[in-house]
Length: 128
Image (tube, rainbow, N blue to C red; front, side, top):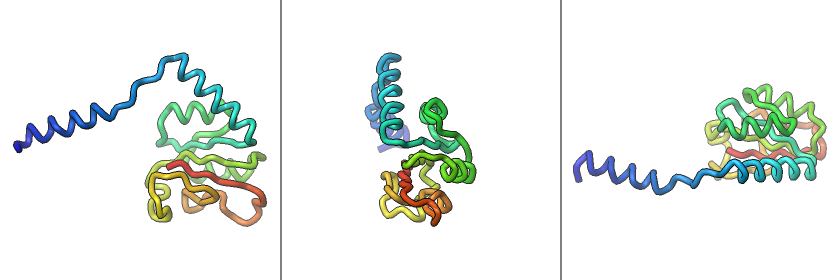
């Protein structure tokens, strides 16, 4: 196979894997459903600066924050929610996560995030 045909093959594979974009109505429905579930579960979403802008906007719209990992930790520590959902980036947890790319319940996705004494009853869910 030539280099050009390999590139075409790879591009065709990537194009086939692209999800169908949501309509504005679908996106609004998802945002409303997620916001309602966060409230129902007494949860807050914190997102890293490197996350997708849609996730960042959702965090801000629902009372969470968008910041670097240190400020995410501070925000989560001081927020009254029972559950903190951390939307990070893969490098934040690769060295510690035995299953990279999967959510880790009751874990510390950033190496210094929230899983500390003094936070009784707090759950941290990492989305990397």
